[in-house]
Image 1: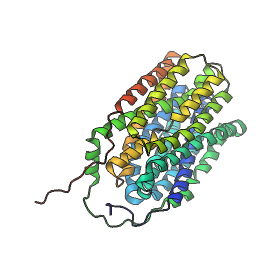
Image 2: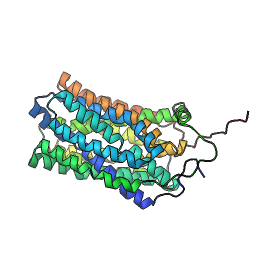
Image 3: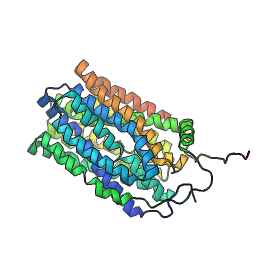
Image 4: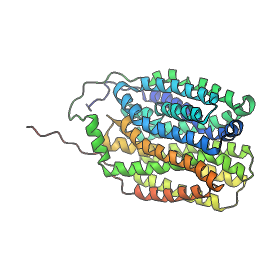
Length: 405
């Protein structure tokens, strides 16, 4: 038996249903944060950089806490981490509505929500999937869960837009805080059974980290994920304001974000399915190259509502489609014992990219009055990520038992 494996696994259906519902809520709520940029900054009299910096801190805190949350989930089970994350999520959303200073807003929308997301999203849920789903279906199962997160975006963005319009942005955040508490009962569906006593070649946490960070393919996957974070968070947070600056109504931005979520349901599912059959490194390279092309075409062609909708649909297919092949590759190379922790470290790179994307978007806009420079940075990074994923080796790493003294 593999070291640390459960004596009896959970039902795959149970894991997928509960995991998908959790990701739907956690990712769905956060995907609509861009809708709050203009009402909050106008009502509080803040610059866009103030809002962008708080969201940048959110992504950074999410990334930094990810390995810790993943390590705790690997050791003590996902249930406790998910419950704590749900409570932090609710508190962060309510305090975000009450914040009247930039520092308080950064503490709530930034720090608290970042910590909450580290315990309620992919790293923790994917660890449960990796330990309870047969390897032959692992990439597919991760694609299903990622597709659920995309459906959450499609579902929640119009809901959040409606809440803001009908109840005001502050009450809308309080309502979402109550909704985030629904993660608690769902988390009990991911409560894993006691693990069997470990046998065979054992590996400690420090040895696992040394092995991963010294492995070239892990380094390349991590660098590529930085680009993913930069691109999607910049677009998700700043595109509504970019479109309004260009004279398009808020309904265009709402529809664009919803289309990204809708088509990402398809894209992430297909990525998980394709990753089960084809080399994942080629799939990842293709996704990054296609993102660069899509962004370049979008900013060069005349901007109309239909060009926005086409761009959103194409980007939706590519949006979170990096998630299943990246995490499945980590599990394939290193095994499942420290899956959540290692995925958390890869995701830290993603969140460092997210920090730069969302913060630079606000910073360079305030400095130049335009988002053009950041769009071109996103294109260049897409080409870079496409190239560095090509040499990734996906075969399982070989470990040898220590020689006898």
